[in-house]
Length: 111
Length: 113
Image (tube, rainbow over all chains, first blue to last red; front, side):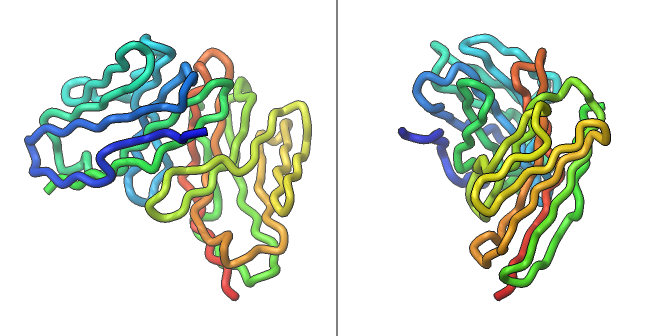
């Protein structure tokens, strides 16, 4: 079974630029999560999708972050404009019955 | 009420010893308590998980102990090996939140040969 795929693995951008991350979940998993993991901290949920719909985006900074999940499969997370404090690893995870499987993440550095 | 508090922040254990990591939660609606292992440059990987209807779950060298009344749970790694050196996260989720996982801050474990 293929795991959760994320790209790119690394991204360096200047502040105020925009960036997008892509996630392909495990086939058949209805639930998709985006987490932000700042160095030395536990992952923090940004947004959770159930199929196409958003079920939790309470901690998503909506003035700069956006996410979509087209056709209930792949998802993209966008940051525009980026701030220095957005430097983190962005993890995508998917779930079928509650057990979440994580991708390797995208390490974002904002300079 | 949504927090999961994890301790210690870091842990050094000798090879063959027992590693113990503790977590506490407040929300009594939580009903799923997984532990994740994360190596540098990798995403978290599920290690073992427990639900509140049992007080202990063992898988190989890894054991979760769960104390519902104290709202605490812990991970025990028996016969710790250098390959166990990683960061461990406890987490919790509950009904009504579509299984949203709330993570602890993590414990960096180093097992010395």
